[in-house]
Image 1 (spheres, rainbow, N blue to C red):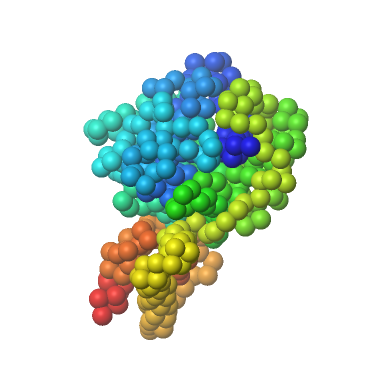
Image 2: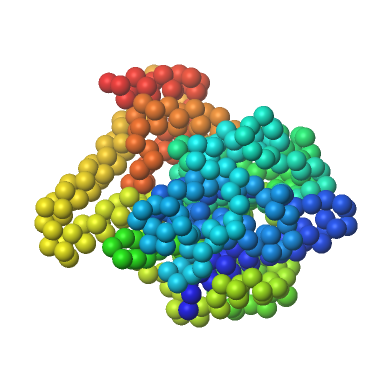
Length: 431
């Protein structure tokens, strides 16, 4: 059975009700559907990110969304990677089809960046590609698949911060650039991107994890390499398709089912939850069965599951294992040393954070407001995290496990301005 059916049904069922209602209601008021789909990560082992976006592109087109209304962001480096076992292709399963074929990419390479993404959302056409020209009659669907941390998600060579999303949504709301907006984020700590959402902006945030959790991936051995192709939540969504009558199922019921089946992260919703009362509706069937029949629930357990936030460690462990199997002891020694360096890096970075926090909270006159609302400090979170990347952790793109960004961000709840925190952080790490 083709594993790609898991992803097809994940994307299709998460968004089938949204698409049906968008298309039906838009016919009534003259509005249209716009979509912005982002694969935050490139690099071969992150194939899930770009493949998910391309598959979703095909599904949207199949459901009647106009191609010119869909904007995609992909680094687009995976298909031509010399180690790609399916050269020129993107797959969601070892035996799956090529979803890259026919997937139109709007922003790639150097143009795949946060600045262009924010211009797209705001309708700023001073950039290099298409932007959202949506109005208050239109519905907008945003999708982001990548790695993430507390208060940010990976986006090309850098990250997209929660505060930047908030500012963009604030602009879109004030300029009436949508009638309803769905923001789906599939990443570690993805809840932190949307937990601030107000209930009256007509925006629903849907995440694969809450504000403080990792997501799980499942890597597959293809030749001598491993590729991340599917996550735990994907399997749970696929199970809900097999077990429930979708014509009688509400999104809330399905959400509860998937949440109960996703054991290692908490599927969450934020913002305007009135949409949860609506029926999921039966997916039309044609698109899922193009890519494979449903996988029985008992065969959908994740194999070789791992924390996506530790993907670099996971890859090195695999290289070490292969070197030992091939009795290449010199290579094994080199990889073991590289692996140890990453473990040391994680320990050293977290020690920097612990020392900085202790030094700050011990300083005379520093007071923390324990009742502070997180959404009140998103700008400060962004400033101190940017500064930490620059001065304390320039290798922040490495996926080496949990880094205690939340401890740095909590300093924003104190009585020191963000500018002072940044200065103290810079001095601390330089010393």
